[in-house]
Length: 128
Image (cartoon, rainbow, N blue to C red; front, side, top):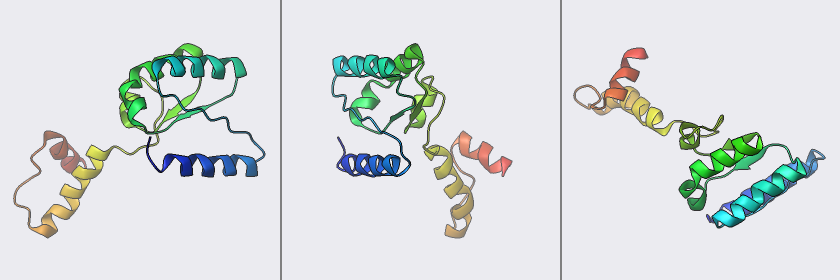
């Protein structure tokens, strides 16, 4: 678990309290705990779920997306790859797109010779 997660959870708890809401948190460290957490969320009719970035969550990304769909839990994910796996929403930028934009915009001022070498960057360059 990343060292920033406790701070993020603490800030989120404070923000929800300030809005008069409750925030339920849980820490899934195995597939069994994850399955139990989804069942609990479903029983509580808790509302939306936020899945943060965590190495364990990345390894079980497809399972999390499937469980959220199975239980009908509106979920937002930190990673774009979750959307690629079938999730509906992510709050992370497309980093490949951002890096290509750097090449397109900053490259000429750094005297980078020639067009971007990735096909995706070439498509982005022609659409700007």
